[in-house]
Image (cartoon, rainbow, N blue to C red; front, side, top):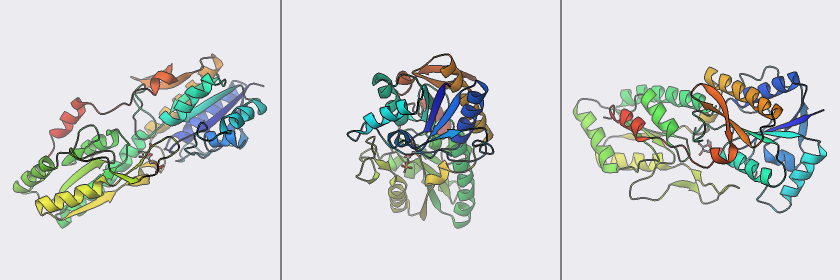
Length: 343
Ligand code: F6P
């Protein structure tokens, strides 16, 4: 019987379970056997795999996270891991692989295709929404809604206490969560990695707002944003297996600087992993489901080396290799819209 392996790698996000469910349901309908690989590429290195049937995916549609588990394991990092992975792929009799992940997981997929595991299809996920080939990745919409709800809540306490609240959101080197939650939540200043922070200007905007009678302000800052004259702010020196630093800390620096320069009492709220948790929004459930079904269709049609993507309202396929090459960042047009409401 034709066997398809499925794995979820990298940071988790809401919508992964709808993809797994869709792959299993569509795969079984097509007469395929579906093998779940645990914890991303790690599961294939350690041969931690399990067959998935209709009962394995029953009731998982509204659940956040991933029933398969995930990790940031890079099989190209440690000597010997690649061989183990390829051996386990063969020994399990896998005929194809569906890799659900962001640029790191899919980057490994591209290398594996060159190294002999040719039958791979990619499914893009990330709350960061930073993959250029797809209009949206699932996970983003849920994270955006969570961040917006938090901004709404922070508004009431900021207003009562006449404070500035700086809200630090995730998004790595792209400002999508910040810009969209900032617009949706009515932030007074939004700071993103794409545009260096001019602290003087930020403080002027806040002061002007206070001069017109407002006694509180909400500043949304993306974790990857930087001061004009500064270096990137990170949590620790250590890099993960894909060479990424852990971002975070810009909110605190910004809050200190704003309080020092304006004299207004300032607090900081770091939303952190709460943005990655919880039940997927209806949008993410539908997108994940469409991606999962399309991924199995690509396998059926031997369209390997492809990634499913949303373009307009159509699910299409694009080359994985090209899809991960360019980071999708926030354009000036959207930032100009956000700026209308600053201050
Ligand atoms: O890529 C998703 C993401 O949540 C980023 O927004 C964030 O910088 C990073 O992952 C956090 O990773 P970790 O869960 O390893 O701390």
